[in-house]
Every structure is written in structure tokens, then in C-alpha cells.
Length: 87
Image 1 (tube, rainbow, N blue to C red):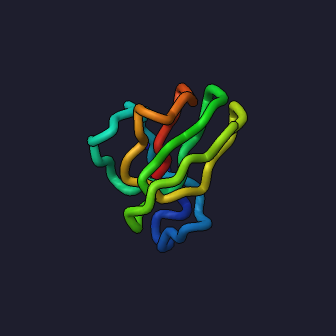
Image 2 (spheres, rainbow, N blue to C red; image 1 turned 45 degrees about the vertical axis):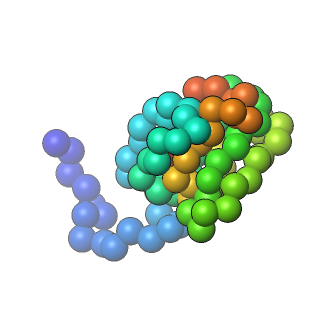
Image 3 (tube, one colour; image 1 turned 60 degrees about the vertical axis):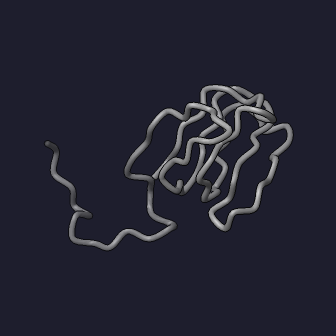
């Protein structure tokens, strides 16, 4: 494994992301709370926010990172594709 000069530092919300996983859209599957979502294919993103509210981000361009803490990315209401959860 490569060395990490920042290993002894506490990560903060403004720190670079340290993990990523592809998002499978689902109206019921709860995922680990994200620090952001990378949107690879343009469209709408409907998500349950960390506080339980539901929001739809309309017309998100491809290549966008949404700096949002979400627990569900809905299938119904989400047309964006190739999304990646960032941690």
C-alpha cells in the first residue's frame, strides 16, 4: 500500500473523499450516509437527506459532484445515471 502523509490527521468535511462505491438506485435501500454524490450521466437525483427530508435535484449536469449527505437515492424520480457515493 502507498504511504499516506496525511494518515495522522483527522479528516474533516472539507477533506478529500477517501472512499467511493457505485450507487444502485432503490426506493427503499438505505446506504451509508454519503459526503457527496458524483453524477456521471445528466438528469434528476431524488434522495433522502440525512435528516429524513426528501429532495429532488433537477437537471444535474454530467460530471457534477453534489455535496450532499444522503441515505437513499430513489429509483422513482431519479433519471441521472452512473452515480457514485463519495465518503
